[in-house]
Image 1 (cartoon, helix red, strand yellow):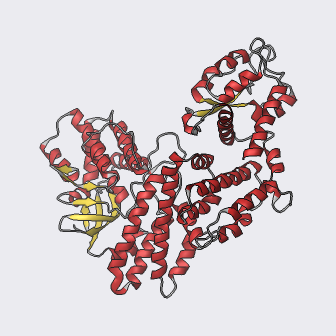
Image 2 (cartoon, one colour):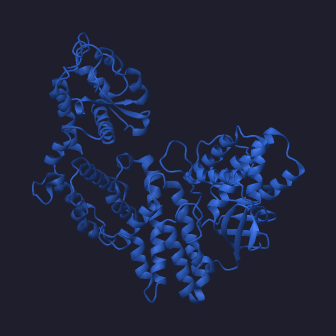
Image 3 (spheres, rainbow, N blue to C red):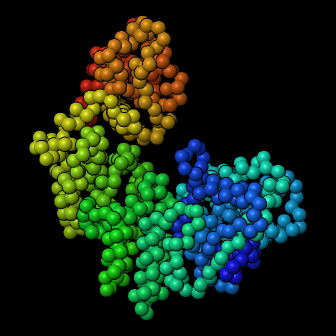
Length: 566
């Protein structure tokens, strides 16, 4: 490769691959009306601005850093997001051009130089996404996007679909201008024999893409410090770190829709240093890297990172599907404060029953913290039992006892999350996401009370779960009382409309279909969930009315369930 070149010359007669220790495709596509443009959209808009301008200078795609594997095969160290997007863009462009007319001889050569010649692919992404990348983007033999295991594969599909939709109505002249702009765009390259030499340059080689995550920065720093201090073991150590990050990035691709990688970095820090008060991971790690012998820390912390991602992948994927207590905690969300407990539970190899018992208590404290909305620092109340929860003393009993104490005590320092505060917090308006969660839990409770051999129902088994106001927020046209609802006076508006007694779990389509119809007509549709049938049982089939007294009665019943079980 020449130092100063073009995209076409860089790709022609070469094979460029993304090594497995690099993160997968992370550029997003704007699919709706997001406030800020996404990287893929910006990629296209920048090119359109260029071809509409009067400049004679070639478009510039920035700097690319490669590790030379052989004479014509390179592993991209920096620039893979841009290269992936270029490959997706060109594949979509050639597809549209072929639909207009057959490629000319010159265009066919360009396709073979830029995309694929016979069975040689010019660019390949990470191993676990590459079959889909080839089938959907390059060869276009696959149409379905169902069953994609990684978020990066979904991003690849989204980018390809976006470019395809943008090209759909473009004419030949536009396409040829775009092709010319990209294949003749200038860039600089730096192939190296030894990857460790490039680490110092990595962080600063970003061209209108995502800023490097803290995890990526730390990976680069680790490899750079190994380059400085690894001595004769340098190459073996770099190989070890690369293998660890290969596992880490595979895990990231599976769980990033649930958890941000930089959050997992902080969770790892809290497990590694055994304190919930740990934070500012980059600053902490930089300080430790400045110590005279940083290599042992790099090795042990990288291992801890890999284990953390492995445990969270098990928690969020395998166990979330198998165990109600895991599914329930994940469905609740907002669990950052307790994630280090979860990691330790897997790290210490706790039996499934003990793990699930711990998850029940953690769910309880997270829910109470959210509902009560106190500014009191819950981390300080849990940190001592967290620190005592070690591989030498892996009993969950002290944690269970602490959380149970916090739920029942009236001591001012601890009572922020107690039953009295919880009861107060659920009297009035509850954020709809949390209300849906509570009613889903209540639904499972009702079914377990009335069905022998009952199997718990997942939240996602309710199609697009929605929250219905039984007495609508906006009164039905005409007389509300005649329609089966209370008088919409000030007391009703403030005390009953937005309360657990008037909320009902329902599918979104069901909710849209009933709108603000009279209560008798609504009641007739309440046939799907146990709590819907409960409304039918609470009211008279011949003269159905949804009264203030019934709303209050139902609210008290749900609150009693919350206080007793959560």
